[in-house]
Image 1 (cartoon, rainbow, N blue to C red):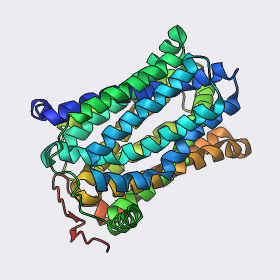
Image 2: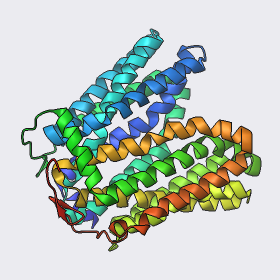
Image 3: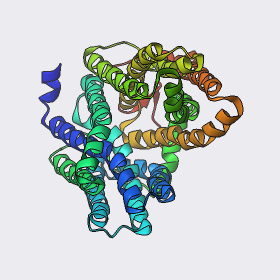
Image 4: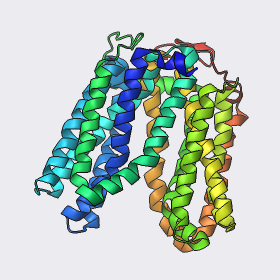
Length: 416
């Protein structure tokens, strides 16, 4: 129930910090894009370098970030990472606001931002169970997912307006301020049941132990493999071909409507999952993951704008359910001492497929045609989403049974 969850003071502070931080992070990409283009006289090359400068270290340091969160405590990592991000984004804003833009220092600061983000993501996954009881995990993840999705919907528009009125530099300065506020909120949090903090030989050994734990839990690596394929064929196709194909079938204004309706689906699903409990949450999440393919299938079939809008709404519902189901299942069934490391392997192996898919989409579309590529991508991603359900480890994983030291019914054996 809302009152019971929000009555937890630590979670309220955490939610407040996340709300502010997520809004700033959702605004930052648009602001940074236009700020770099303006400062570099429209150089697409500069923009590509700056954007890649953040993504590459994010992927490269995820495993270290997961090991550090399990080793040092998630709140400590989150406070330090947010303070660091406030400094680096503030420095970027300072360079832009004072007219001292240069590619090398801005790209270097974005490298640091990527490293800090790699430490943040695994710690965020692991800290939620420390703030709320096992019975509230699904509701907490649904509420956090709703905040995250609302920020994604509102942030780019707010950032665009800010860029038009005051420029990209102030918008990035606002992002830096949100990190500072988030650090202050997290400093008020006192997790109860954090990482055990037992001594380990090295971070590298922790990373290896995390890999063994990841491989040991069958449903985790099956789901991760599914997400890898879905991200490989779906994400880049939607981002790159989606706008152009939508314009051909529904006009220039249709893409904005489609994105807005998809965002509405994300928010509706979060509200429903806040209260709705199901016995097999992971199985439901894998099933609804297939719904994310609907817009691509509609585009591939050239069914027109009304069908695309409906498909986008249903897709938003499915994607939101999948995210909540996956996060909650990890937090309920992965041993607490290894949660951030297992989450970091899941993130790395899922997200590394995205840039590969993005690079492949345009050549495939030139060779086979955009509509055909969209149809095939939709079909492949739908099949990849439901394939893990062939395993009983996925189908039968129960919801609502948090097992701090077990997963898949087997005791967690360190180093095994």
